[in-house]
Amino acid sequence: MQYQHILVAIDLAEECHPVVERAATLARSHNARLSIVHIVEPMAMAFGGDVPMDLSMLQQQQFDQARERLDTFTGRYGDMLPADQRHLAYGQPRQEIHRLAIEQGCDLIVVGSHGRHGLALLLGSTANDLLHGAPCDVLAVRLKKEE
Ligand code: AMP
Image (cartoon, rainbow, N blue to C red):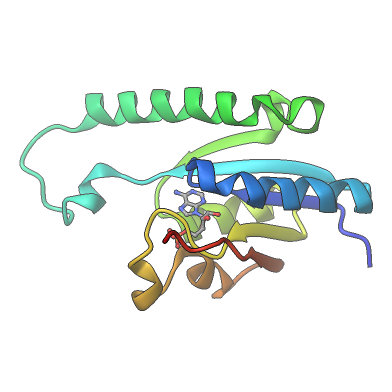
């Protein structure tokens, strides 16, 4: 079976380069299109949902910074990840990655087995979360644990 369109999801940490490398290798061998996505999580979520101040400016800055980091991060993949294949969305990672995979017609989502939220492994990582209700195959690339 050949994959046609692979979506790699990254948290923009340096550790996720092996995840993108794996997705890029798969895309080459399947002659598939490769897209990349980073989800900016709402600040209110990080603060528990109830923040008595206007976060819109901070959120815009957060989004602009993420755009810059995504462009820098993908720079080294050159032609494989042109601007229209780099996606930035705002919201809850599982929901937004699934939505994008459907919208873009992706048939494989590639993620790291863990990333920023090491402790979340105990509670359920993003990779684990993504499996629930996934609209296509999901590949979790095993990342070495930090010592
Ligand atoms: P985590 O479970 O948060 O430690 O992350 C596991 C993997 O999920 C990471 O290596 C990324 O591939 C993906 N991931 C985590 N957070 C995000 C995010 N905000 N946007 C896109 N992908 C993410």
